[in-house]
Length: 430
Image (cartoon, rainbow, N blue to C red):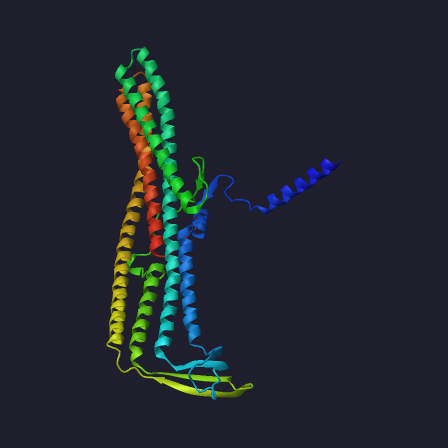
């Protein structure tokens, strides 16, 4: 009975632990593109690095903003003096003071805070840009893996058909209806198809491994990648003249960096201006006397004016450097704009080309299948045509099917590229 109760307790503990462990959404082996993107942005180190940089920029801005507010310090001291008149100091002095300070006019510090504010905004968009690029990489890896999977399915079907065709050719050879060359050609075609199949299997596995590295999701050759089809059309994509890239996070980041540089220039120029501050204190000071301390209590306040007169050109050099930094950011923004425009233009062309190819291959797949079935029927009917012609027609059909798969992949990659350039992580609904 004692052992039975012990097992009950152990079983209950195991059940509690099992319930505490989160259930994975990938237990069934089927993974969606959305799941891959979400996991990559959540767990990939590059995303964490960008997030840490954003928090660092936020803290720098908050620290600079805090320096604009009044500060209060408590200071105390005790020391001894040697060589002075002991009737005054008796060798020591002690103090306790509360000191408050505030800047009344300090444009350089205020403008530096605005500069850091813009840098913080730029850092947030940099983080979005990293996530956008990470999502784009995941999309490309995902569609490559899907494409190789479709090519593998086409080749496996082709290999099964070639196996039957080889058996038929060998029977026809025994009947004297075909030659040994027909059998050899069939075997070579079968071997080539098997070699291509192994190549595609290896390439798909490489893409799965890359996806696993980006997302942290374990993937095996049996993993099923599920993607919802998008209509093969270009009608929903904006024309080049209608795109401003205002939602592109990289462009937004550069714009805020440029604003930050403008504040930096103004902050450097303001160092030529005077600064005005206010300081007040209240405290207690004591000087040791022969028998006890003689305390003094009081308060003071003063305004401080700092006017720079001569600094060996340090401020001027700082202004020059800030202006060059602003000019650099201006050119960076123009370069990025040109790069985005060219990439978008090329993506539109690639998309239109993919759609045209898909329309053509849809027709060609049907025709090539009919052509192969006709050739195969003539060959199996008694060798009315050579096996070489049948193999060519079979290869034509397979190549057309494979070309269709590649065209579909190019279509999706063009869509993903356009989404990336427009700053859309998830893009069209899938």
